[in-house]
Length: 226
Image (cartoon, rainbow, N blue to C red; front, side, top):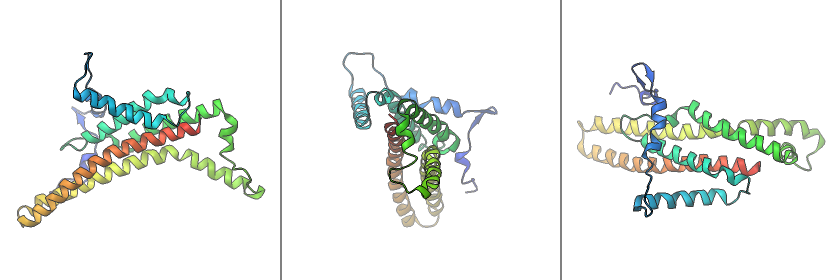
């Protein structure tokens, strides 16, 4: 195959116009809603999963932190559906783009940090200098803690980008090997194809886990500042 290994990560265009915005807006359309008093099994299961996830993330928060519950639940649903749709053949995964992940991570992190400085500035500043620090080490620790604070959104975005990209590249390589071996050795093709199926199952789990990890870390940053 002469296809570029990174061709699937190029942002698609329609008539020369970027189609990433349409792709980002598509996942919310797949979330089913009900206008009836009694829901079907799909809606009931969806509501149960949302309540379970929100309860697990919001248990540690106070009243002010729980005002973010709708945003965090929407975030985990969006990332999970985007990751899962990206596993479909000939599809584009927006979460493989570092720019998009930074666009999600930076505003959420900045909102949590600003809220912490507004509500309890003493506790926020205390994180920069642990209690009992020797006087000669104070300047160095302040610099280190400042860098660790500023690098948090970058770590969020890079973690999500790296995990999703690595999985897609591995699936692409094994899929290409399966197609190549199909004309050479059938038993080897069956073995590689079995590995590809197992990897696909693993990637489905990774897509959901990474959505949960991203949202959980945002929730922890919020907890530290409320």
